[in-house]
Image (cartoon, rainbow over all chains, first blue to last red; front, side, top):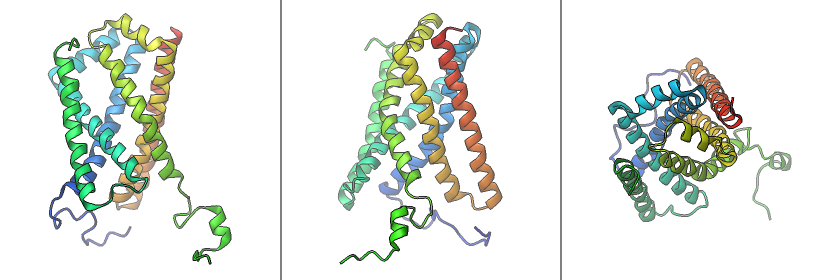
Length: 130
Length: 128
């Protein structure tokens, strides 16, 4: 596309914020986050194959404060993309496009992501015995 | 009476106005459906290994079913990621050379990472 200096989509600055657009933007944002996360997963698998030393340095990174924060963010991004992805698959069948149900399912994706992340991390932080 | 204004040949080819059909769209959905199960399997396996030592983690991934699912997970994940990132780049990168370079770059990175992941799982599963 030619560089004309005219404002281009997405026109975030002129729209009133609504949950429908937030759920759409979050789906792309979490997708990008998960794509980066997939490289970290690959690093973890490669370290497991490389031997005890490599694996120890990977788990040390993952277990550090920053590592835990990244994994918490990854979990939230994952569950959001999962919930909203299932929502999109349902919508691909032509269902759920009435404004009311579209807004409700947007909120459902967001709430499901938060709840599932909370459950997962409750399990992790209680030492996996919950 | 048919209201379809397209040429019957164009209709039979099924490639549409974008000239490449629904391949991208459909692959995105099929990989998404597969990833619903593969990612949940991966997360559950990961949570099961929370306090596992190196030998346990390696033995778990090395089990045949886990190795197969791990490879399926890696390949499907990177395929899905490339399709998604491609759309984002096409939508928001408006400088043509940067757009093309980004599209090629994500494909190179995804293929290398997928091969690295598959090789890692095979090394663990085959014990070398």
